[in-house]
Image (cartoon, rainbow, N blue to C red; front, side):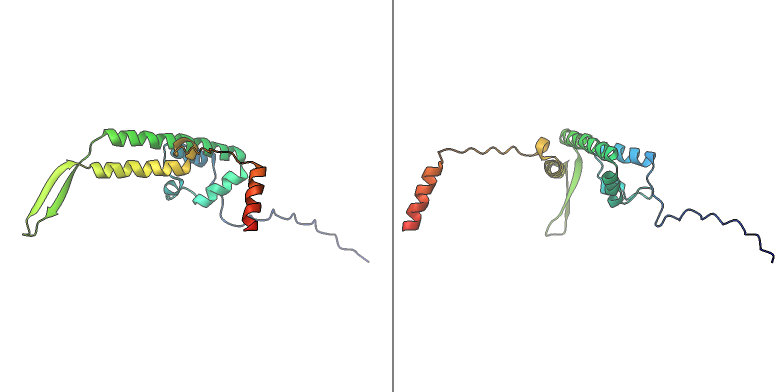
Length: 164
């Protein structure tokens, strides 16, 4: 009886990865850190076509401790850049036109510094900084306690209240 020669077994190909290919490259990571250090919010920069979704960036920070530290340092520098922007806004007058229409239908134009708008820009930035980095940019709250509280005094007060 003749036996048939066996064919060599086929090598199995590596299983294909599922999902989209990652956009993570050293260049993208460097760009994210550079733009964060200039004070640009992550949500804004991730609107660009070549950038990943913000949730993807957060996933990258959870998976890579070094990238997470780079992001934290970039954010800190970005907060300082936003604070510096506040000084620039405060020191740079911006001329604007305020248009009012009178009851008679006449239009009156008033030119001058847009002080209210500049105040709003500065206040918004400072409030965000206070939320994002309260240790450096938040209001310092100091609480003081005066008087004395002892365990014996507290127990006596509780006895008096319970006997009433």
